[in-house]
Image (cartoon, rainbow, N blue to C red; front, side, top):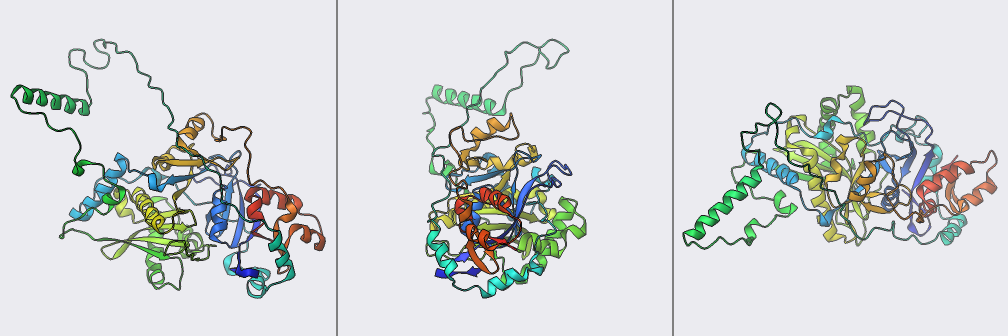
Amino acid sequence: MVKMAGNNSYTIVEYFGGDDGYRCGYCKNEKGNFSHGMWSHTMTVQDYQDLIDRGWRRSGKYVYKPILKKTCCPQYTIRCHALKFQPSKSHKKILKKLNKFISKGELPPGDGEPMDSVCEEAGPREPTEVCQPEMKCAAIEDVQQDVTDCPAVAEVQKEVADVKPTGSETSQNDAASVSDSRTSSVAPKAGMGADPKRPPCRKAKDVRKERRLQKEQIRQVDGVPPTNPTPTPNNQSKTLEEFISESLPDNSSHCLEVRLVPVNFEDPQFAESYQQSVALYARYQMTIHGDDPSECNESEFRRFLCDSPLEAEHSPDGPEVGYGSFHQQYWLDGRIVAVGVIDILPTCVSSVYLYYHPDFASLSLGSYSALREIAFTRQLQKQSPKLLYYYLGFYIHSCPKMRYKGQYRPSDLLCPETYVWVPIERCILQLDNSRYARFNQDLDAGDARALKDVGRVMVLYRRTVMPYAAYIRKHKGPTDETVVEQYASLVGQDCAERILLYRS
């Protein structure tokens, strides 16, 4: 991490355009996926928080932003309100299923989860011209070692405006109204459909309700007072945490332990479990996604899930574990069976990826880990009040198998034009009619952090930090203002004045 005057840390990026299409992991279109990208040599957690709140996402050290109007499967940033989350009936079944497995040791039948048939690669492969971590640009390495306080930096810090909280938010989650269209009941004809001589099929719930009413009527006839319909503390809905921490018998068949380890080879737990994680990742990719061994070897694992631009940071008002990139390991009877890769940021826990042992696919570990990560977010929020959200990455409505992320509610999607959050119920109504949609219904609203002055964009040139206006005066050669303007418009004025754009 580069340290400048005032002991501030800086993010350093190299920007690449988004002209070439690449293979889509969702619809398999060979050239249909388009995105802007940049290689991040190092990044502060606040800068990354602000970037994902503008539709960016990282894959290793490569940070990308899908071009939603152009790409085949538009990807919208989605977040869940962790504190307001209530597990649905299907979520409760998943939690009970895993607890039953831990208790009795019986794996349920089934093939796994809907998303497992779709390879959710967290982003495109970075361009070949990007500086790989093992072949750092000499200039960048020199900067990280040699940059010291200089007049240019001091002047820049006076110019850069104070950063305001990111993103204006919608104040309410308005439920989308769905019309209830019912067909008129017409008696079926003989030989066409249901047998008209037999009673019509009824829902089991309705049958149980009718039986309960009949029993109440019999009780009243016999002079027995009716049962009290008011709920007791025992049958009130449980919280997510109560389902997760449900007490198990002492003689349980299995033992499950969840460990949070920082992505840092100097950390003993991470280093000791590294080879086991590599082997598990390869097995998952080959079995679930059909990868070739060369596509999921150790170097790919390290590039994708261990190389993070985020530097570990601690703050007095932050969580005790600090900010940065972590692996949440699920240990079953002394071995790792799943790993959730997450980033802990100033206002959220951001899910990066999950891989697990294919033998346990029927336990729905993808959904189970998401529920655990929501509970973990709530735990962190008790230590850091502004850490309120759980980011699930991208919601892809045009790919039905990727709509499961919308089941963790209440949740919002990010408007791709104004970068405000809109309740998902409203967004789905638009996405049912069009792959691309502007969710903000205020047509006069714009991007509050739109680029206003390209001259104030911060650049790193010859180991010196300077505003772009100063760089233009020093730099001899063809102008790159069009590229710099495009970059700055995508990251926004605030980020452009903090992040250092590397210029050779």
